[in-house]
Image 1: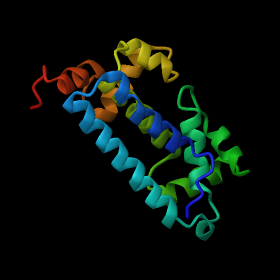
Image 2: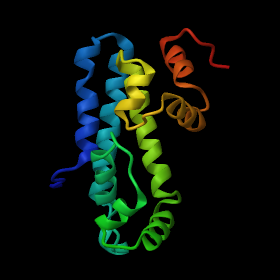
Image 3: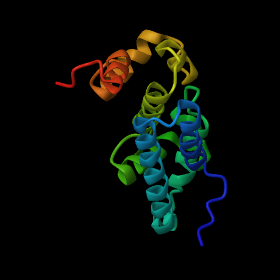
Length: 166
């Protein structure tokens, strides 16, 4: 039996899964829900087999903290404080364990959340960016394009089938 306690990522993923009820039961939304459920189950398997004691670095705690604060800006100091480390040691150990920086991971989480909103929600791009802690819609669009390779508008049009993929 796996006790996950309060896990912000699982809660956020499950809430996304439940949004299918609001978006209707069209085939594309059912596929999205099936993929979301697959992601939740895969994540549970990873939690079951992960061994945080081997590294002494509670990566799950950091990722849960990121998920819980996805709607606001987050500084490296706040993440390091979660494990009582200096930001230098935190950044070095995080990169060694994950292959990327904590801030890049956090930005990717935000963009993943934005993609979910663009897929299933009706909010405009400015509202989505603002809800993720980006006060400047242009900056949010630039970050989104850097991560996804296309603007949020292009992404939404592509997902709706009105934008050429090539």
